[in-house]
Length: 164
Ligand code: RP5
Image 1 (cartoon, rainbow, N blue to C red):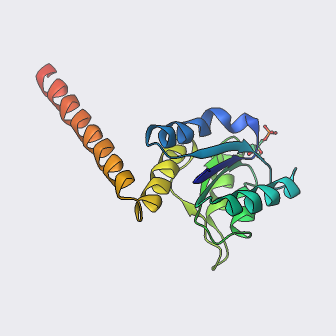
Image 2 (tube, rainbow, N blue to C red):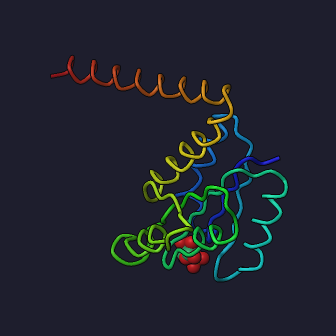
């Protein structure tokens, strides 16, 4: 049973979105990672939301570029948290996708944390933190991962300080 569903609007988004799946895997969170487009395959998008929610999915993560309607289309069909990943490639370094993803009508929010690979990573961390609200083991794994990131900063600081 997938706890998180990652959808992207096109296979061409895969390189930027894959880090999201990597982090969920690292944290031991079951997920499905698939392609569906709000515009090219609206029925498929709707079916995935319906079926995965029925199977127990708790968070949806949706990545798309250009008009970037996917996260909003999913948010229209579920009250589970939806996190959007705007993908660059369209106008002005992806500003089109950012605005399309983030500017949802009140009542149908899409949590939008960052763009491209950074957005993919933070979407995974945000999904994990949501799931950890009622999963103490996962909360511990997130704390351990943060401790490792903090240790890496300490190590980098020591290297820079020693070199200059
Ligand atoms: C969006 O349009 C996709 O998410 C992708 O970022 C962009 C271009 O898609 P392709 O034409 O490469 O399939 O729907």
